[in-house]
Amino acid sequence: MAPRSRKTAITPNNKVDEAIQLTIAGKPVGPGAMMSITGERGLFKFKSVSWSKEGNMSLTFVGGVVGEECWRSFRPERVKKVH
Image (cartoon, rainbow, N blue to C red; front, top):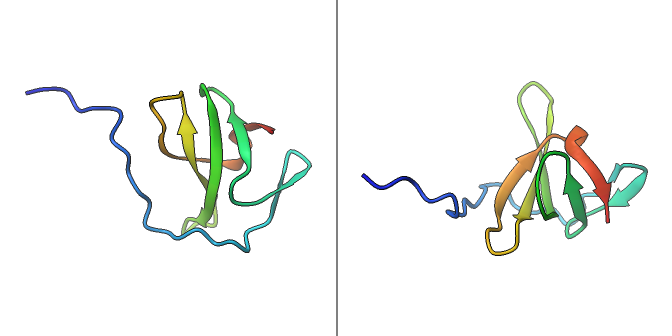
């Protein structure tokens, strides 16, 4: 059996809310903002935000290493820099 490809893009079920306006690292950000994530290579484009039942915020992005972009979700604490 061949190993699973890491390049498989998974589309999240939540829709992008154009009204999202967050402040991360002291800068206002909305959908389309480019960010660097601690421990990850490449840049990520912010798409949406969601909350768990426990009230934890999760940010959804598209990006990563050029040629291997995929959908990823990170906690706000992992944002290193807003470009």
